[in-house]
Length: 312
Ligand SMILES: [Zn+2]
Ligand SMILES: [Zn+2]
Image (cartoon, rainbow, N blue to C red; front, side, top):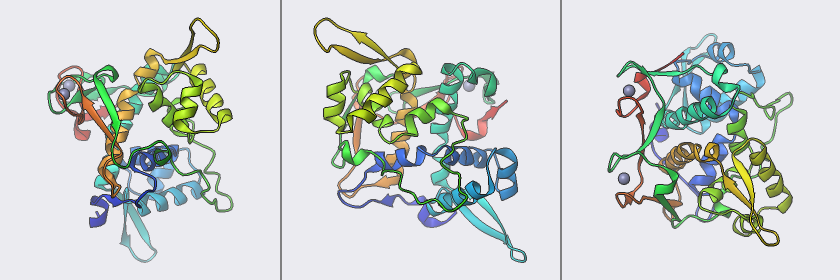
């Protein structure tokens, strides 16, 4: 592990904050899948190739980007010919709670995924389990209704949206074509404004004009994201009396995405530091402490760790 990978990245003053940076990372499905395989023990190029439906150019490109971002550490273990392996860093490992939450959400809420994705077993209690978001301070289970969120010193919508995807593609890189393994998660993270819109909905925004005023996003984009979320059942439309009273509300499926959002925010704020301070401050209303989310086992209530979770 390189030492700087274990240190947070210092962000540019006034630039994209921790939320924008983590959303940018999570917006690439190959990144998630490669990290997932690395967590499951893959280290060599051939192993990633074998385990993922990925092309050579995309894998090469992603391994380089993940190494540059400090999520994987490239070590040459043989010089002639050069053979390298990619070891997951502490920073890469920190994505585990996010991946676990995504896995659970897709399995439980995306119809065809229940058969496609294997269940998870907690070896500590020898049970099939679901991860539950708990508060590290008071130990209680946390839901979206029991937290308040406010911007920290580096927080604002414009700073919390990832950069527009202008990433230059090398010839033959079909990287924009995603894997399609977590399609609905990618409908949240794979579009520049979608995650911000969903967080806005969690914070209570429900009308089109309010989403627009808060986010400052182009109306056509907002309309299309809202449509996607309604189509996959993350949001639903309710009409109140009066003119233009269309409200977009989170469904149970949408609310169940909360642990993904919290673990992602937490991971972002752990590894990306804006000089002004944090982007978002979340408080657990029940204990009044800043929320430090922890994933626990719904069967035995113990905190979950990577070495005690088996898949399949
Ligand atoms: Zn608490
Ligand atoms: Zn357990």
